[in-house]
Image (cartoon, rainbow, N blue to C red; front, side):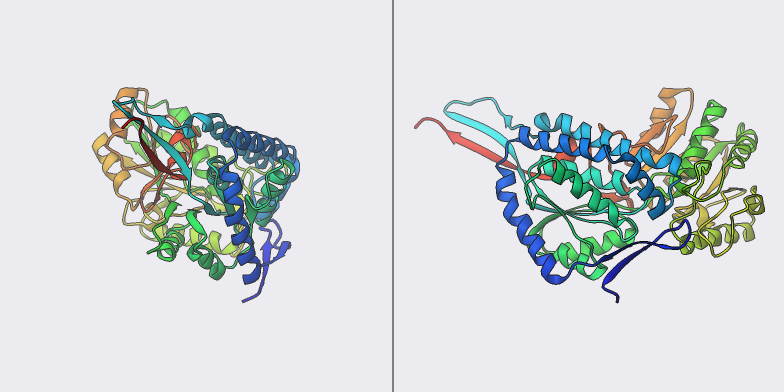
Length: 463
């Protein structure tokens, strides 16, 4: 195995970044620095931690244009959208900063005769964050900022596809005056990533990625009695009820399915439409999808960029071809998108109908620009199909009857339930999943609970 990381840009197949992987000696030194820094950072007042994180966000957002260009070249996000990730990073960071003091404050219980009782939140120690390439800043900020606010130190391992993201966050913390060792990054091989999880200095792991990757994390951490927060795959459904605002449902679900070329764990991958609206929904959806502009990510007119690599695009093409062989109808002619080419990361969007759950495209995570639309005759059928999945990250219902839609949400196995929207992460709400979508929680005040441990004080004040 090469000891150098190489990032191939999906835009043109050229090498965009090269970096040396960390050596065992560098890894050991980083772990020791993180362990040593935690003693000082733990004792730093929360108000000071908040001030440092606020300055970090300011420093980070000042690099917006540079960061957007790098995202575009590293993973293929159209440049017209790439800066939105900087805004999202700031939104989530600011929310956790704003609630940190209250969320981390001690819980004081009513005094009983001769006793004082309280519960404080103790930082866990060294938190190891393993971040993916598809939303490289939006996924990593969910863990990094609250971990540091809580008094932990952080080691970040970013995807080999987006290594510059780790470096930009580190630069921003350095500009903000964060003490040395509190936040570090390492470019790591898979083997050394597993080794860091097993390192005794690490007391918690936050991982975003595949189900197989999550299984590796839990296996490596087994027997160490440390926490693991796992955000894994998704096959997120949307249900369009007969009473839905049709135009709004079409516009929202199509965007949820095709933004970022469908490379979103909480993107819409399957849509169930009541038979009363089905045909009109499909007609409008196909018309809208045909308006996408497939092209180079650095072209301002592009609205659908390349997938991260040709292998990923060919996987989705295989799902589509198999579904069509099984009776699905493909509504988009790929030849209408001039850059679409077999064996290339440039892939035309696709809308499939006459689909069912015997097809992989409706049950297996696609992570690409394809969506299946299935006709249903009732709420009960829709809920059954929504739950007929090994995943459970988000789910959406579109309806003008909010009470009825909410009742459906109580029946759906999911971490986040939306009504009349999708594919959005509100930092005030807990971000979590069920089944193979993972375990643990980030963001909201509950996110701090997973990055701290409770410590009780029971003090007898008189004898």
